[in-house]
Image 1 (cartoon, helix red, strand yellow):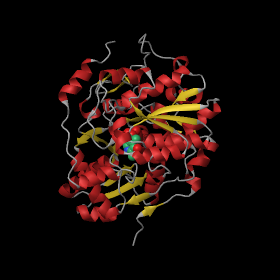
Image 2 (cartoon, helix red, strand yellow):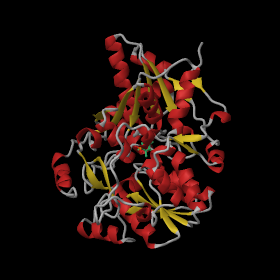
Image 3 (tube, helix red, strand yellow):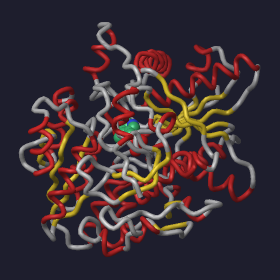
Image 4 (cartoon, protein in one colour):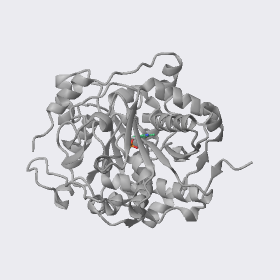
Length: 451
Ligand SMILES: *Cc1c(COP(=O)(O)O)cnc(C)c1O
């Protein structure tokens, strides 16, 4: 019987990150200063980020070398396996061939360490001592905590309160690596105190947690801020996923007809899709690419493309992105990693250029798909990853109806072993679907900055 798993030797770990900005037919819109609304320069970003990351943020170089010290750490779990989902194909009765890249083998169980490690590395190189950040479901905080520990940096994590309460084990994970984890909104920052004064019961959001982390970082010269998604350099670091997947598919004589990923801020999706999109833009043979998001936080499917702030307190620069408005607080559904009001500018740009299709699904159908996948493949996906799973499933069902044997590739961006509360609630029938909160979004969009 043919193998279901394709592994690569250590020597196949990519030596470079791939930058899609080099191949866009139209350049990205500039990032604007929140006060002047003029394009920002490197000096505006210097209080928050080290020079190497700022350079990557604005780079249009196609290939950017991965430092040796970073590759040495990544090698601990990379290259990650690519699986053929044979039993799931059979269960779905589809003629399609489904492959998934499994990022759950990283130490924190998701794709996030792919960028946490280089971000910690470049900060240490720049003489930074402490890093602040936000985390939703806790995946990013966990990944940054361990990366900081590896490079001898202090780590302070603002965790969205609803997740802090739902996922206590994530905090224990972070504390194991000596990170400090504070529920957000908190009394420890001006941004947090302002929110709590208005709403003492506030469940928090990524936008609020970002404001708190940015505020703390901007106050001391030896402290930097790190973001786990959205920014160009974060998406760049994730492109090891797609580069490896391309090589693994080639090893079994395949190339994808359709690529599926879930989108919170867009980084794991970009990681798997951008290397293929870049190649398609260069040789004229573009695969279909599908971005899947929650119906309760429908950034790509319902949010307009507009300049907006990355955070609630409006401390960050303005970026052009699909957005639901920076004051939008999504309902407390279980995919904490997908509860962000905006989308990566590079992913938003792909949408504008017609390079991707966006879909949204409700919470219950994503869990049903994830359970079906787990029963066939034995891996329990993270609630976020269930969105990629249902996206791939819908493609497989289309193939069944059309009698087509497409090759489907999706990113299983993390396991759900820390998300048992969500699965318990699902099995107990306690999860429900949230309607798209039209009114709240309309209100948040009314607050978009006028330029
Ligand atoms: C953080 C996270 C996401 C959402 O972030 P992206 O930048 O869109 O990838 C999705 N899945 C998992 C498992 C995560 O940890």
